[in-house]
Image 1 (cartoon, rainbow, N blue to C red):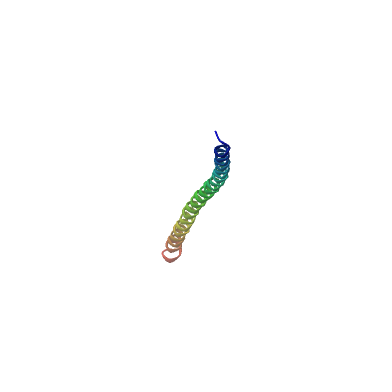
Image 2 (image 1 turned 45 degrees about the vertical axis):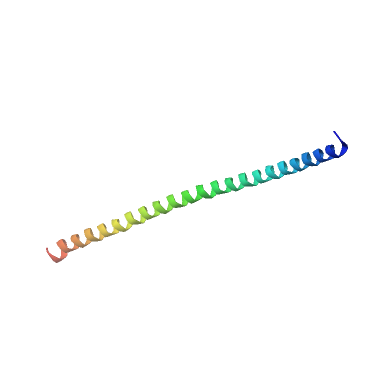
Length: 83
């Protein structure tokens, strides 16, 4: 093997090592981004659940006040207006 061929082989190996390091760094960055997406996805799911709970709570509250209003009106009507 000539001296020039050995130098070319060493250059190729060094370039492969640099490419491997770059791939490793890119993999770490991608993993970090995936972790952030998982966190944001989980927080989005919690927010959607909270929104559903709030909608159900306020719907029950409004319906409760309507029923209470109808009850009070009927009670008032049958006791005061129509004795």
